[in-house]
Image 1 (cartoon, rainbow, N blue to C red):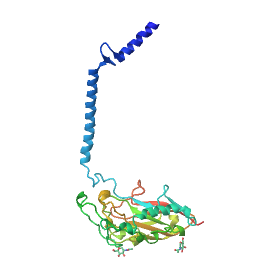
Image 2 (cartoon, protein in one colour):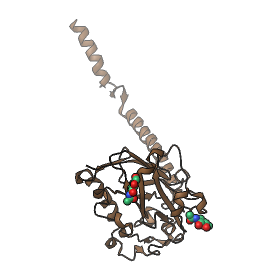
Image 3 (cartoon, helix red, strand yellow):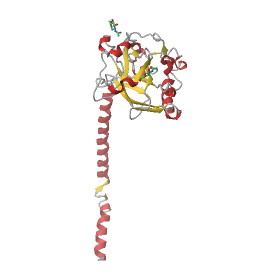
Image 4 (spheres, protein in one colour):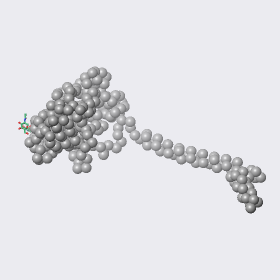
Length: 301
Ligand SMILES: *[C@@H]1O[C@H](CO)[C@@H](O)[C@H](O)[C@H]1NC(C)=O
Ligand SMILES: *[C@@H]1O[C@H](CO)[C@@H](O)[C@H](O)[C@H]1NC(C)=O
C-alpha cells in the first residue's frame, strides 16, 4: 500500500513540474509563452473591434439633435403635486397634510424667481405675458452657441404663485407643464370649434389651451369656478422650440396653474385635464399623453 501511494503521488507531482523534460503542467515554458501571446493578440483584436464599432456609431450621432425622435412626440403633460396613486388628498385645516405638497411646488417654482432670471446673457423677454409666435433661434447645431431662454415670472401664476397655493383655504392649485421635446413645435388648435364647448373660452391665438373638468358625470356639480393662470391657461408658442440641454441649459418651460375654487369637500372627485392642439394626441395606453387625471379629496376637518 505505501508503495502504490508513493507512485500516484509521484505521477501528480511530475505532472505539475516534470523536471526531466522541464514541463510545467504538461507544457514547456516556450509553449506556455506562445499560448499566452496568442490570447493577448486575440482578445486585443476583439476589444479593438468592439471599441471601433462603438466609436464609429458615436461619430454618426450629433450632440445636439436626437437621432431617433419619432417615438417621443406627441408630448405628455405632467403636473405638480404628483403622487404615486394619482391622488391629491389633504385636510385644509391641518398644514401637516399638505406641507410636502407646498414644498414640491416651492421647489418647482424656485427656478422661476425673478432674481434667477436677471443674467441677460441667459435670459430675454419674449413679449411678457402676451402670447407670440415661435421664437426661432437658428438650426439645431453648435454654430449659434448657447441659446437664451425666455423669461417666465413666477408671479404670472397669480394666487397659485406662492404661499400655501390655496391648500389652506380648500382651494388647491396644481401646476402643469408640457413635457419638453427637443425642436418640437406644438401647434395650436385650428379654430375654437375643435375644442369642447367649455374649453372654447380658453381659446386664444398662439396658445395651446388647457382645460380641466370632471371626469365622471356624477361629479359635474361638485367642481366649479376653476381658474387658470399663466397665459390664461395655455402654453404660449414663443417658448418653443426647445433646443435641448446643451444649447438651452437655462430654458424655462411655460407653466399653467389651475386653481379649483369651489370643490365639494370630503368626497373623492375625479378630474381630468387636457391640452388641445393640432399635433397633440391622446393615447389609451399612455395616460399622460396630452392629458392626465387625478383624484382630489379635500377634507374639511
Ligand atoms: C369661435 O370663433 C368664431 C370665429 O372665429 C367666433 O365668432 C366665436 O365667437 C368664437 N367662439 C368662442 C366661444 O370664443
Ligand atoms: C359652489 O358650488 C356650489 C354647488 O356645488 C354652489 O351651490 C355654490 O354657489 C358655489 N359657490 C360659489 C362661490 O361659486
